[in-house]
Length: 292
Image (cartoon, rainbow, N blue to C red):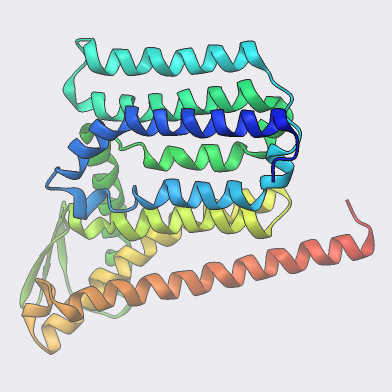
């Protein structure tokens, strides 16, 4: 993987600074894991570094075999990361931003050390795995609450359309939907944040691994956004129908409640997979015909 003696030294140093970045992020992540909202918003964070390591390992020969240090730019970026960390620990910033800034600082610090040891060419090849680490940065509570509220609110509009199409009478007042035999309150838990962030991550990963043209990668990621909203809206409607015709307790939780969410997620994955397949076929045809 790392052929030259200098390359081995650089790789060992990079691992050392990676571990140092983990140390910088350890306490903030530990605080985050003690947050009672961990199951609702942050379950994806532990897997992000694992995916990044997997992506870097897949390109290890191209990334680590020929280091061409960019010492000064790398040191400047790493220093910026340390500055962010000090700000998160010792400044008078509002507490809700401290964890986000601390984790971001660790990523920035490690990205800077990577650039310092391996240079711009290697850094360009690794830009996606390094950028993917940003999914490990927890959003500040105020931003998270706003985003989840927007997703849930947009999902309500889909429920309006779905109930109208299947001719179920309803009256909506804000996030409350009055239906025969039931009142739906579309709260943050209805935003399906875990499946939503998973869908965005999967679409970006699939585009990176299987698609070459940037516009097609962008299209795949962009389609994920409306699919998230449609998925959430239809899920609410299906849960209402199950609760109304079978047992209203299914609306409150349990296996059936979760299974509807899992089922909708699988359906969306299939649709995204078909789109990915079509984009791959298009690129293959363009390559075989010599089109740009």
